Image (cartoon, rainbow, N blue to C red):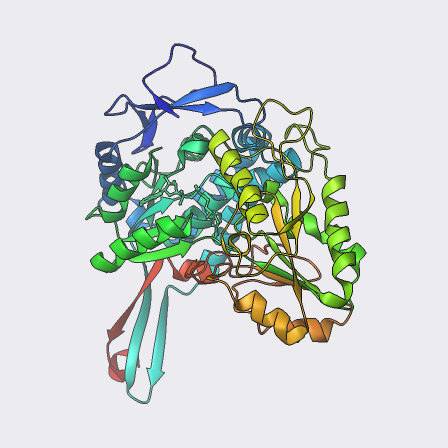
Length: 492
Ligand code: NAD
């Protein structure tokens, strides 16, 4: 929701942007009113940036790289600052986690991990990695002798969504800063208020001015960040639709970009699967963050020989979910991020019904939760993989159970998708499961579980994205290689 300034100020308001190490007054007067997902009540107000604010931030980032101290720091110096930022974020972790839960409905236990623990862990991980990375190597080959240098790619525009705001920002900021880049972060208006915690931590840690800049803004100023002439690289996480537009613009400009986009991933339940294990794993595989997760396995592929059993197991899991206040540690399913998004998710119930799918459980708003943007955990059976419910990303707890004939058919259905982000295979025979997982065209896949490992590359195939985040591999996305041909004589 956007509006002119409101008179109901709260202590969570964020009326300024973080640019060049300072809290600066916006150029325009537009604001965003944040609404608490569980109650529908106003939470706070944040200034919304314009292209002029984005321009200020990019220029500050450019100065910090070209004229400021950051461009001349050693990896060890950068690592030391990143560790101090990690400490400053860790000290704020409890407040940050609660704030994000109130903004987007994330259950607090998950929020404490993804918004509280993950960002400092990533900063420390990339601080360690960059200290070990050879920024200069001497190569000898049959055709010459060369000094190979790694250089920061330059000014990075980081554009993030609302579902894991702190973690996904740090997926970009930590490797970018470690590599020696400077960053302009444009967070999503839905999670307007928590983004500036990074600014508070940067000030406390003594990060030099301009190295990290934060401007909350909508799509249009986001576009101006993508095409800004002083930006060298875009790190984007969000929808495939926006990713296509950003990728097209980056293609036009020959600008480096990493795109982490949507998914419609499959959990393949084999005929020997332990369904207790499946039930235990569904919370992360299919319902994490109220299924507002890019890796949600919203297609559950079940063998015809055990179809009813699998449908019952998934429905039983849904009935046992504790739907309610995301700040209550007992809650396992919170509300959707916004009223619009809740309506969009519920729209898929109608779409699935119209296509002839069978509603097994859920399908509406939970009884007794009249405020906020709650949706019942919902399971549809007898879904055809050609149906819209099986092809489009719902981004909410509406799951399709799709029957298959044999292993070959399961792989075919799993791969019959525009996307290729995540997935899982459930089986008592791990060798069989690993062999089958290897045939699914997807960036990440789990065996009898699903979770993201911060130490391993993460990203998508097909329309789920370009490039990888996390792991040591993510550093490469923020580095350029330069080969200095010097000849064997000079190298001795
Ligand atoms: P979104 O694409 O609507 O917005 C994401 C961000 O991009 C926001 O900050 C938005 O303001 C900005 N934006 C949108 N269009 C833009 C444009 N043309 N130019 C510049 N900036 C633009 O996505 P969302 O609704 O915030 O997030 C949900 C989506 O994100 C889902 O599709 C989900 O799958 C995806 N996602 C992917 C991953 C991943 O790692 N693959 C992780 C989380 C979320």
